[in-house]
Image (cartoon, rainbow, N blue to C red):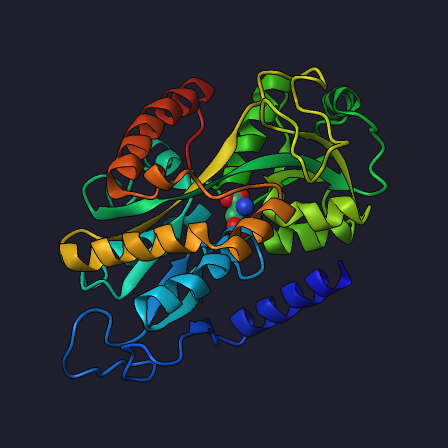
Length: 344
Ligand code: ASP
């Protein structure tokens, strides 16, 4: 797990010095003809680099899933995919940037459940999820885990509830900003526990996990695609997984239902988006490449190791993606309104 830690540190350093683009994948003989600025004079899509925007920090779970599929997608498309981390405001900064990008198929957003929570949280979001994007397809649905610094006093989820109630003023809960999955899960936890805690926002849960391991914050909710390594290595204390079933790769971790907090159920679905108006030919090629990537045994194995799996083939489509987003926008609008939470 030290390797993971080093990777995170290196990735953050790259982001910090402003080199936000990392070449994620490159095929040998495909249609890519240009450098980072492209320049393929003719030919079909793609004829230059495609940028995949991740609206959270490098090294975190959304970034991890993006990089996993970027390579096989690039190979299928016959081009190059560059991953760019555009962090901020719970994923809404990067999403807004993609909504306003040229609709030419060369800017693609990887986002998660946050696409469906942000409209209920932000007054002036600056984009409309259903109107300003074309959906490419769903990617994966990832369980969340509730994890704490290794030496945090509570031993079980029930202990945690009791402890945070008694120490509400001093316990810190990390998240990736308002509207992030970690924020949403933290909100559900606080609602279930009947407590209001001090939240510490990061630009992604990659850096939040580093601080958790370092003992700078007390606990958080985050995807297994970020926390599995640290849980298995015993670098964090893990209380529960937020799905109805246990996660195969973390067999000892109880579900929130088993651990006595059945109200806390959430899993983090991810999807790929392009700006509204992107040519259908490009959308179809991206969907095709996504389908191929999700069937890639290497991707399946990598995901399984991190507690998740590709969506069923039929869900990696614009239709299934749109239906999911519509349903989720309604679900979370109600939960968030009931909780009375707003981004300031
Ligand atoms: N897991 C983060 C979230 O809470 C995002 C990330 O860093 O990928 O939404």
